[in-house]
Length: 129
Image (cartoon, rainbow, N blue to C red):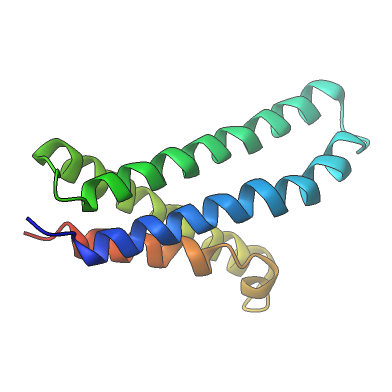
């Protein structure tokens, strides 16, 4: 067995996305969110959700990379397919929110879809039989 290049590309792009989210995004979000005028329970809920996304991004990158390795199993391939669909739909959520609330210019305001959708597409292409 050899490394599945599309899956590995998907996993590495997912790992990059997780790193950007964790190291650049947290600093950008944490201060304004925690010092906002929102009620404390709402602030903390949104902050916890931010970290739930962090965990999801990191673990899904691991799943995609693991499924690309020569030790790939049917279970890891199924997990990679599931993760790829998640990333594709996560990206489509950003596209929908941007277009509905801001029009086409919103796609630049919420650019996360630029990384999310390719991870999903590469993952789905890499899990084809």
